Length: 335
Image 1 (cartoon, rainbow, N blue to C red):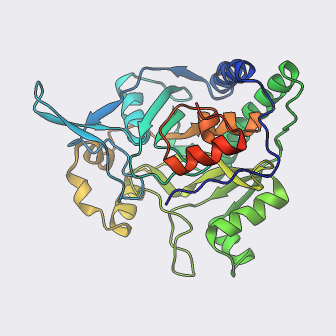
Image 2 (cartoon, rainbow, N blue to C red):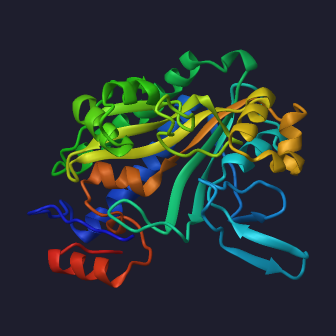
């Protein structure tokens, strides 16, 4: 279902020309910060993958990939939902040593996405993946990496405010960590979305851990594919968005499954049929490096730092007639 809300009295703080220059600054500065803090190097990434390999991210398992036949190869191409699994294979193929990783510009099409202020059919992310030592598969390493990423965002926000003083958003650098079970225990009468809003309203920058697990209530906080993140060692970076007055996810990430975690999670998710796919066989046989990785929304980060109320102000996509009319009435320019 599509839905758009324009906050009362909202105006984009920058002119159209300033907005484009500010987006350019965010991309350049944040990429630099991320590569330095996490020791990453840029690689080229595919727009589509062979549908038979199991490399595409199936998200919650119900979203349909954009697929097309390729007569020259006899294969079916699938436009990526994300590069969560492809990146780990790339670490092996490109021979990244321990302590070093890759990042890339990921462009995806999610045809079944509902459209609202923060969701679009077009998805753009900085996708990254880092080769780690097996002994770093722990919560402390995960938290240190989260702090590094949040630090990158805060440093970019500072550079942006210095260049465009009219911008005032200052993200909270201190990260509040908790698990989905702890969040449910704290707010048992709220929905998962309402719980996220409550904790972000209080702490502003939150890393919500262990997404994908079934909680004691019998439900999951949110869905997560069983074959990339370890559900014990993953999470979302959430920040409070003062323009929208709500929580705002800027990154999904985690330490990736090893053979034992993949075995456990495929069974829990009812996905044992994937064990025969090439990627999954390599993982179960211990042929892929241990890694940590995630995706950081490019348009999401731009929205937050620029004070935009709609993702269409910072990316070019397609919108339904109701959204276009609502934005036009409110003076909101969709690219």
